Length: 74
Image (cartoon, rainbow, N blue to C red; front, side, top):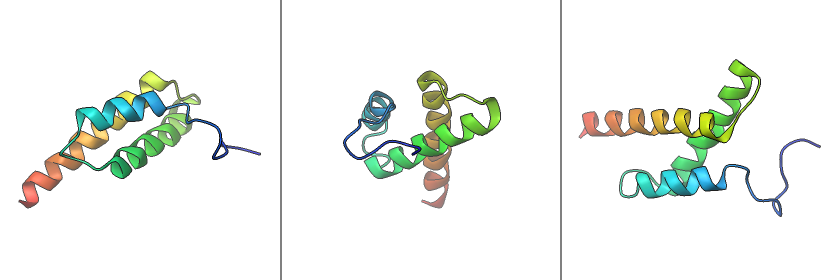
């Protein structure tokens, strides 16, 4: 088995909560979760590990870029 089951908490739950608070009113919780998941897999592919601090930094960058794109679209 890989990944986590529904009963196991996400190893990035604190990261998601912090980013949801930071981007409240800008992005939905679902968008934050998708960015955290993408950051997790991206970190694994590039570095071979996905420490929560690294995942948080990558996800935050994703969320900033998405916010910029949304603001450009008006």
